[in-house]
Image (tube, rainbow over the protein chains, first blue to last red):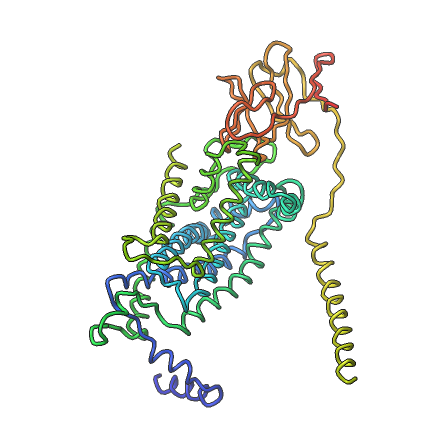
Length: 359
Length: 143
């Protein structure tokens, strides 16, 4: 067996020269320190993305977009198709865990300042991936065509409409018409299964290539240690195996959640029924949703909604460009301004999310 | 002389290139923009018999493609308002206990005249005219 694989590798090596791959596998190393645990978060996110890809393709075999078929086909998947309920639950749960780990990954990178030179573009591509992840969540939420999804999409796309000038055309473009209808569903389906995967894969590939080229980030404290005190483990096989072990753990948690907390399908969307009580977006949009709720109809001279949308847009832009923002670090400051900003962001998201569920 | 010729050709190539790109992008953008479907023009709608409609209840009517909420406020008394919340387009409902119109999405409240009373709605709900013609409820667009 080993002989055959060696032969195969030699065959390829002779033709395509595998030196770069061999170098990477042999020389890549991972620093070991108190905060090494955060190195695993990106890997977990990547793993969950692969689960999404796989279960998504499976669901695609039975799902039929359309006002008269979407809800029915999802019901068919969860009631008739063998293990259809499992595949759908795994897809829904994995989506949620994916967003969760992506956020953890982002904040751990933020607080360890791993975005600093030379890794600015890794941060920027990571942020773009996160935005597309949220777009995946938003577009996928509508696909079962149930009440909650219908109104969440109405609200979500209507918010786009408050933007001056471009808002209205953009809303029509997203909805495929004036209102949320079957045309919107077709569009979201196309976006969810074709457009987003294509763009997402491109930025994900860039993100991963950047990481492989530059190696793991070392925190300030670790970098300042004398050479002999720096501990590393080889990426291959040590770190990769640990990664794999964690993936197995996460996979088990995922299956547990999918088995014991099935995702409800709810009632079919009806364009002429009042919005049901307790309507809310997915939890990862909750903090924005709740903030918009707190805004009065008018703020100074602009509409409250518009103010909220512009504010979140600007904050997002600043967040993406964090690596390029230089604030002089004074010696007498106990905490750096950016760290405080990060803490404020986390606390804000946390409180708003909780308020969204209890109010 | 030679350089000028090159410049000239590059310019031609550039203009041609831009034209080429535009001729590709324009159809794509137009394709993405959905065609306007002919909106069925509805000016009035029969909404059933007065005697079949219990007091202090409501129903949502399909007024063309727009939802309209019809509320029976008292004996032979009706109110008809646009059912699309002016905040973010959710469909409102009638609250029987407080006799108000409520949007579940962001807790917007309107009174029975469609005036936005509290919560985020920026504008009142558009009002429709209701007449009883021989026991039949007829809802008509105003203006």
